[in-house]
Each structure stands twice: as C-alpha cells, then as structure tokens.
Length: 552
Image 1: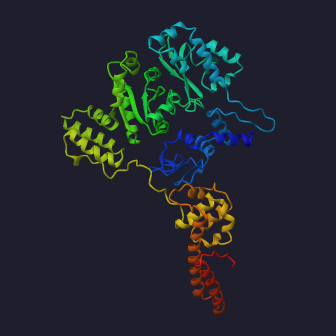
Image 2: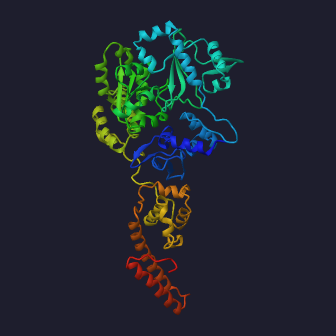
Image 3: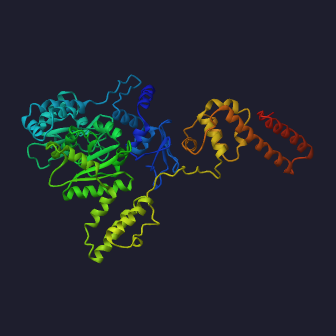
C-alpha cells in the first residue's frame, strides 16, 4: 500500500496544468485554463483547470478532481495505478507501508541508454555517419546519441544487469515472437526520446547497415505514445517559452543540426503525422508554430494536413518547405544558416498555404473543377473562427475571380474560443449573491463560526443545499467545485465587506419574513402582533449596522 506521505509528496511535485495539458489542449483564461472536456462531447470549452487550487472542473458534465483523479478517469486506472503512472512520469520514488520496500522507478531505459552511448565510440561506421552529416561531438553528448549492437548483446546486457525480460518488453526495448526473445533496436544509431519532464520513455533508431526500415521508433507502451511526444522537446522547452516559437521538423538529425545552428526551439514528430493529440504539447507557452517540411509530395501533403489542423485550432505560424531534396540539416551543414533564419522568419501562413495548395490541385479554367475547388476551400474555411472566415472569404473570392457572395461560410457551427463566463450551474435559479456567500465560505473557512450566529442554510432561497454542504467543509463535491471554479462568482474579500453584505441580505430577509407573517391566515392576530414587533426590532438593529443573532 502506498504511504500517504508519499502520495502527498508526489502531489506537491506535480502540477495539474502540466498533467492535464498532456491530454487536453488548454488555453489561459484569466487565472485558470480552459479547454474541451475529455469526458463528454462538447464544442464550446466548459472544462476549467485551476493552477492555484490544483483542481479541474467541467461546468458541463460536473467532472472534477485533482491530477490523480484526472489520470484515473482518463486512463481508466485504479487509484494506486494512477499514482504509480504519475510517479513514473515525474521520476518520483514511492514509499509503501506494511513493510513493503520503497519502490524505485525502473532505471532500465537510462542504463540501456548509457550502454548504447558507450558503444558509439567503439563503432566506427556509426561515428563516421554522424560526422559526415555534420554532427558535432558536443551534440552527440548533449542529445545522448548511442549505438544499439546485435540483438543477443542487448538481451545479455538486460539480463546481466538484473532487469527482467517482462519489463524490457513492457518498456518497448525488447520483444517476444515465434517463441524467441529479440531486441527492438539492432545495429542502429540510437536517439533517446524523453517525456517533457526529461525521463527517457523510448528510442528512435537509424540503420547504418542498409536495413529496409531506415528509421524505427519504440512501440506504444505505458510511457511512450508517439502521438503525444515530440523529439527533443525537453531540450527545446526553455527556448520555446523564451522565444514564443517552435520549429517542428520531420527528423532527428534536422533537430540536432538546427540546435547546432542556434535554432534551439526545434523539435520533431516521431515518424508520424501531426495529430490532435500533439496539440496540448504544442499549446504550452502559446508559441508560434513553424512547420519545416520537405518539399516533395509526401512533405507537402503532411504540411497541408498539419496546416488544416493547426489553423482550425487557432495556432499562429506557418509552413516552410525545403525544395530540391534538401532539408534543414543539409542547409546547416552547408553554412546557409542566415538563409534558414530568413525562411523561418517568413513562413507561409497556415490558412494561405491551405488555400493555395488546395486551389493548385484544380484546373480553375474548368467551371466544374472550379466549383469543386470552391466547395473544398469553403468547407475548410468553415473550420476557422468567424473573423478568419470573413477575412479569408474575400481573399478566396479574389484568388478564384468570383463574387464574395458565392463564398458561403456563415451560419455554420465552428470551434470558437472559450465563453467569457462558464455555463450556469444546473439550478432552478442562479442567485449570484448566495453563490458569492458560499464561495466566501469555501475560500475563507475562518469566517464560518462567526457567520453561523447570524445566518443559516434555511435562510437562503435558491442555494440552501450548497450552503449547508459548504459549511461542512467539503469542497470536493461537483456542485461546490462548480462554484469554486466559476470566475464570474466573486468572493467577499474581507470581514468588513462580508458584514456589510450580511446586513443588506438580512434586512431584506426579515422584511420578506415580516410580510409573509402578516399575510399568513393561519397565524392568529395576537401572534402576528408579537412576531411583527420582534422582526421590526431586528430590522432596526440591522439599520444601525448591528448584526442580529438568528434567535435574538
């Protein structure tokens, strides 16, 4: 059983925005972050993450909790499994109770990478290849480049270092097939792949023996998901945040050479096209995204798909294509660094690139083809924000030589920015003052004891149940998280403000109660007279600025 102290230590190390940002594309919205809820289908963001409270809450489906609960729900894990997954990602060692030994994070990936690195110097063909590509010794060291030998040597290393084959298979460095064990990386230059926090989670391998598969990556594992990772992001993160720019390339060597040339904001996808699962990582730091792709047919097609994805998601940036069979690594080796810098400063904007590339596929002199081109480009424009739709509607019409009226993009459902206020709480009536009182109790629990002398849950007209729950001190219920995370609900910031608000509320409350008493036919005249004088006495004190007890 994992010790509670160990769990609290893990919680203090992790950041909920960082954790959820690996799964959900989050955008800064005031003091919180917002995105589309992963637990129900929605088009407008109602999912809010609070870095100060380390909680998330969805105003649509009421899902809420901390980072551990999010991983539990998203990954369908038990509580201990979610803790162990997060501990592995953050390189944190858990402690166990009941005499169980302290669980250490497996060092297999790090040990194997150190061994691969030691073998590189002893493998002249691999060193020669890297030198011919222009990679410095300092870059080899910085990026941890190594060499994987024959399969049986890797298997022997794993066993000799007391790692189990089951673990090696689970982490994707070995496999079992047709009754035999084998290493995943055989006679290849290796490039360790890190999670954003720096832990090694996989490898990329480049053949130097002419194998049909020039590059291979680790298979999908509990730690390695190539659709959520970017090569060298751990090296580039600081530069990305500082420059507010990210260069996304297609290869490891492109990244390494760009870093050598000073473009330390460069990363690469891991042998896969850019997907929506990459967006949370791309969004961190709100950088401008530059897609640096080959200019061949495959590169253009990948750039087109990426541009559609990024422009629909509201990213700023553009595309740089390398023609003539060249790539960024070649240009750096040839000393064309200034030319590269100029290209990166002036990329073709995503939307322009999509429209021009799409139109180039049609013969616009043919009316039927022109009609098809209009249909395809119009469908693309509908994925953009209303402002971009309007701006590029005129641009597209001019490019095609048609009337802007023929470009019909209005009235369509498009993905928009987060609403200025969260969806209202599911109640018959949403009373902002009562909600503010409840939020004050939750944010300033020290006021509760004094407040109970003057007000009770029964005195609230619309949110009595929530107030009663808040007084019990448990803010983790969905209905209270709804209130805590709603930025449109203010908190009474100090005791003086709270007192003044209570004076106003209580005066109205007792005025309403007096009128109800006087209209009630079930109350005798004598009792009405007595209750009326009692309530008027309370109102008089309240007008003088004196709070009155419930039974006063």
